[in-house]
Image (cartoon, rainbow, N blue to C red; front, side, top):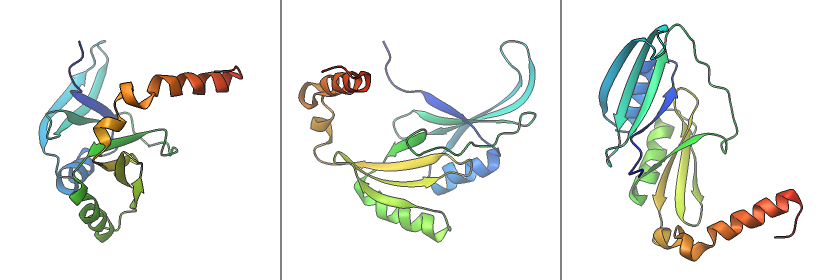
Length: 163
């Protein structure tokens, strides 16, 4: 039924600042911009909705609403981040590019199945660039990795009941 992700949408503080990061820094082209004057419920608004295309045809999208200022609530990295797949050869040059621009950059982090680097966009969102390792597809196969059993064990342990 669900074929793939079309887009994820996030609030942003400034559409041009966001465009500069996603298009100029990350290389995701701005593909459409929608100016919204009214919500589907009939409420007046003044919003700009921008879409940046990934190579697979999916999009990252952002809303700037000038009558509702947005301030990102600092969160733990686990709580909210956007992970984008890249080739392994991209990680080191992107770390160097971020540091040249004075951006905080962390990594690379070894996650067993992927290697990742992290930085924040101008809105505060953590952006993870991750490169698959050779064993990625096998490690992500639920028939081989015991994903459901691990979840059941976690749930039982959290509830204090035997797995």
